[in-house]
View 1 (cartoon, rainbow, N blue to C red):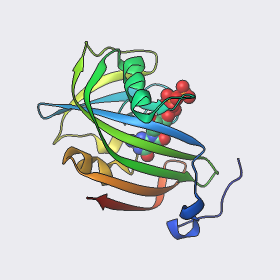
View 2 (cartoon, rainbow, N blue to C red; view 1 turned 180 degrees about the horizontal axis):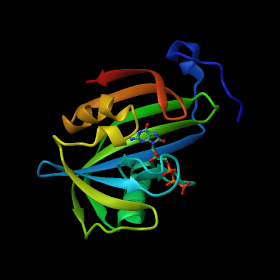
View 3 (cartoon, rainbow, N blue to C red; view 1 turned 135 degrees about the horizontal axis):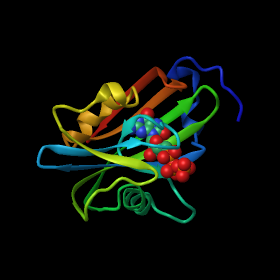
View 4 (cartoon, helix red, strand yellow; view 1 turned 45 degrees about the horizontal axis):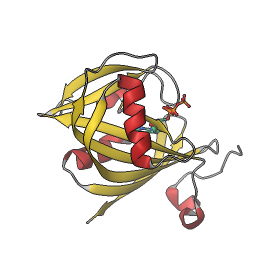
Length: 168
Ligand SMILES: Nc1nc2c([nH]c(=O)n2[C@H]2C[C@H](O)[C@@H](COP(=O)(O)OP(=O)(O)OP(=O)(O)O)O2)c(=O)[nH]1
């Protein structure tokens, strides 16, 4: 992995950009509450996030999104809707392309696993201070059922630049 000299989004050739890893995020939103996790390991360990992770060989984004929720919280998300894409470039050279889903219901009882602690929040009380810096830019769009594509440049945990396009 080669570090890149970019300091703004315009330093990156987005036309030919391809992430090292495709990944997913899923937000179960039910009756004004959202199910988040305290992530115990992997990229973003310690932060609060939605359950999710990297695609496995041969898997669709939807299959990955469902599997990650099942693995991390022992529940199955229901009524999955795709809402958007987040394209993350890190200055250390790493890149990840995240597909974001919302689910309006689930089967089972969420429980702590090796990977995550389940946490419910009211949608007006989302703990953005404990989340990735970009989440406050696009999670409100997902909550409003909008579709979006965003590009983000990070130096470790610090967001250097971003842009979000709403899709109709
Ligand atoms: N909300 C949010 N999520 C992010 C950001 N950046 C980022 O990678 N993520 C998510 C996408 C993935 O769901 C997750 C990273 O994948 P992971 O490390 O959990 O992958 P994995 O489950 O396959 O982990 P592992 O088995 O390889 O440890 O973090 C961000 O800025 N905001």
